[in-house]
Every structure is written in C-alpha cells, then in structure tokens.
Image 1 (cartoon, rainbow, N blue to C red):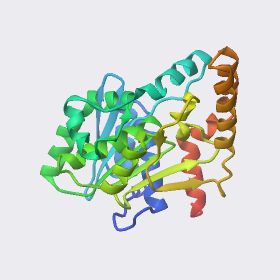
Image 2 (image 1 turned 180 degrees about the horizontal axis):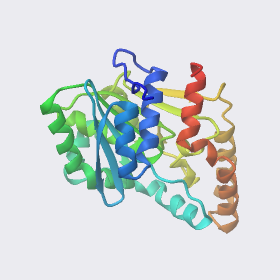
Image 3 (image 1 turned 90 degrees about the horizontal axis):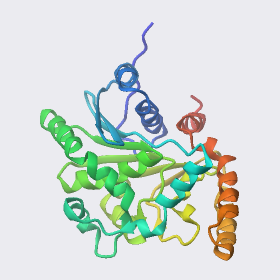
Image 4 (image 1 turned 180 degrees about the vertical axis):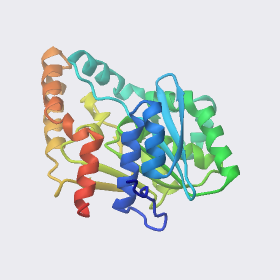
Length: 289
C-alpha cells in the first residue's frame, strides 16, 4: 500500500518536520541515480534530476510547491592515509579570497571575507549546469527554494545559497547536517546579514566534522553561520574540548606521525555520529516520530 509523500511547510522556520524531510533528501543523495530518483518521487514528492561534474553532485528536486537543491556529501575517511589527505585539505592556508566569476558573486560578502578554497572549487565546477537547472525551474513556476546538504554537501549548500541570491533566485531556507565551516568570521557575518533567520545548521555534539577545518589543529580562523541546532540533548562540548587538547599537543610537538595517529583514533571513535541516519534518528526523536 502506497503512502503519501512527506511535505515541506514553508510557513514554519526551523521546523523539525522540515528538517527530517531534508535529511531524508540528503540520505537519498548518496544513492546511485537509478535508485534515488524514484525514492525522491515516492517519498518526497520531488522529480529529482542529478547534476554531476567531476566529484561534485547535487539533485535538483521539483515539487508542486517547492524546489529543493540537495548536495551530495563526502564519505568520512576510513583509513589513516585518507585521514592524512583530509587533514591536509582542511589546513588554514586554504582560506582564500575567491577569484574569477565565483569571486564576483562573493564580493558582496565584504573585503575581509575569506572562504575555504577547496569548497569554492567544488562549487565552481558544478555551478553552470546547476544554475541553469534551477533557473529553468523558476521560469516554469516560482516556488520556495530550499538548499540542503550533509557533511561537505552542507558546506556547498551554504555557498550555493549565496550564489543563488546573487543571481536573483531568492532562497527560502538553508538546512544543513554535520557541515564543516566555510569561511572566516567576516564570511560568517556576511551570511548572517544575507540570510537572517534562514540558515539552520543541525549538529550532534559527538560529531567531529562540524569542527572542521579546525582539524588542522594549528590555528582556527574559521567561524560557523547561525543558527545552530544541537541534537542529542544538552551540549556537553566534549568533542570540542578534546579537540582543543589535541591541538595543544600538536602545537608543542608539531604535526608528526604520533600526533596524526592520536587525532585519527579520536575521530574514529566518534565518526558514527556524523552519519546522516544518526541525524534523522535524533531529529525524529525530538517530536516522537
């Protein structure tokens, strides 16, 4: 027996039912296209089209009363070698002022705003076909635009929302799950001005990924955008505290093999909290679904 698809309610900001809908969209985004598209249709009422360029993917979902852009996230590292690559790509020397076309779109963030270069490059490679697809849907029927993503996909969702706004496509809400930081304090302040009451970042305290790129453990010029929604009960800050202690050790000893092994072990014990299904479970528990 078929069931009615889940629905978004644009009249409710920061609503957990909306978050659960979007978390499911993020989970579907990890599936192969042939499996994901029917589930987007049956469960979420969206005709979803995959936009994929190199290693960056997003689904553009068209519903009767909504448009949903869902960025596929990145898999957490499962080996020490993978972690070393992750550590390198999140170092602070990747905090830059974007150049070229993407730099033009972010100029309005202000002269002091700096953004993670890797995230910017990932968005730049998919931007042209993604923008064309969303513009085509707006021309067909203007509807509230939701932008979402899990993990790296959440960071790309934030940056894409900014570019949509600069291209006269009004973003209704941005909802992310376990997303890393995308820029410095000036960049975060620019997002607060551009999207007042429209950004909701769901995090679980044991999940270490929202502390990235602080995983460089050398310095942290990055800041998060508001509004943060913490799951799993009272925030203990245990993960942040432990990361700061590890950072102190690294500052003294340098980023040697022993320090990398210790940080890797710390993350490995907590990475299950980063899974999108964990976020769905915790959000569902908030309203007893």
